[in-house]
Length: 180
Image (cartoon, rainbow, N blue to C red):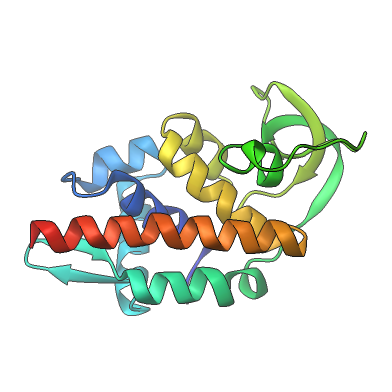
């Protein structure tokens, strides 16, 4: 059974692209132990969201896209909370903040995070490791923002996030095909 941290791990694999990786450094980058990463990779492989190609584990883009677009919001629902300090997500963060200009006076959705610089409405991250992992990897941050918009955005936000996510996953898939 997948855990929310497994989705963070597979999105990290997408974000790093064709660079080689190892469990320990990947764990450090995501504030997880190497054993958590190893167990997550095993669950990801078992769920067919990734495949092993020789010595390398790569995302199965077709299955991942289907799960992120059609299943994720039902499995990992969004919890919203009170006004808090945090890191912007959804329509309030890149790449969606370039498309959605918030003219309302509503506070933006944020992941609660003590070092965050924005006050907004708490939007529970996919997993507790997501905010710190996003701080060190802008590509991962943008993928997580798109996933959050799919999980908890309005219909238009979801549509645009799905289109952008599909574009990014296709680019990853295209890069993998070139290297093969």
